[in-house]
Length: 288
Image 1: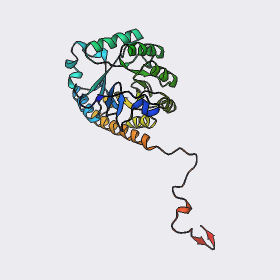
Image 2 (image 1 turned 30 degrees about the horizontal axis):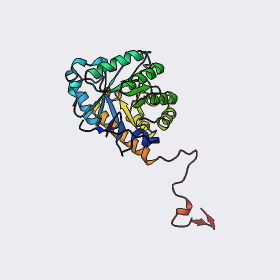
Image 3 (image 1 turned 90 degrees about the vertical axis):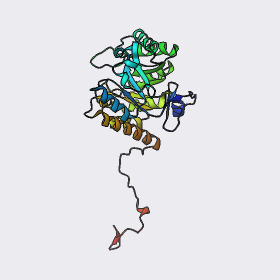
Image 4 (image 1 turned 45 degrees about the vertical axis):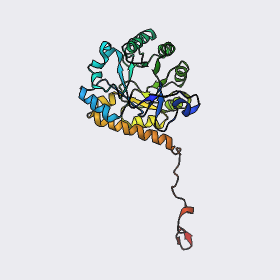
């Protein structure tokens, strides 16, 4: 890969431990990435819109559903043939799986077809919400991690579950901001902040992101990266929206590192009287 190199996993605690901090670079799944924006490839109006959005986003990691591509010919797939296979890292997902066993089988097929050892475990049972099944997701993560997969576990924004997934061997946890494709944004920023603080692997906020401001908030809360699909693919101008998300992720990351001021209940003057060049004016001996 032109823009990625093999990374060494760090054993330190805190942010430095989970991300092997290298400035703006992110170490995850045995690779080092320069972009913290992951882009999904589904739902675009046409291949040209997808290609333009990928270029505008600056994303290195592209996701796709294993069940929607031609595994016998990945390079010639209707979607993937428009992607530069030398510049990007593929993150195939197990969308459509209902059980851990089914997700494991799909992951093995993708690896055998040459898609690599990265896999996003996505197991849901309710079509109306597409919320992930926590028990099956945890079981699939344990099984696939033992087989050498770099597991990116899509899950709900449950801090306890995210810790369990990391302990089970997940390379990254991917809590949703809200249901897939809903565009509702981040419904529970408190939980996402807790996950980012407590989990020792990269936290990639996935699902429900509707606008660049949502992505910026996720990064400000401490997320390592953000995955976006529908918000870009269904935008009136996908390429322009992809560029907006690119800047939002960068701004949110920079804001996190800069350290925002604490929230206060009451106003605080930016300049106190002691900082005035001239003493307060007086009228009749009484200071104004």
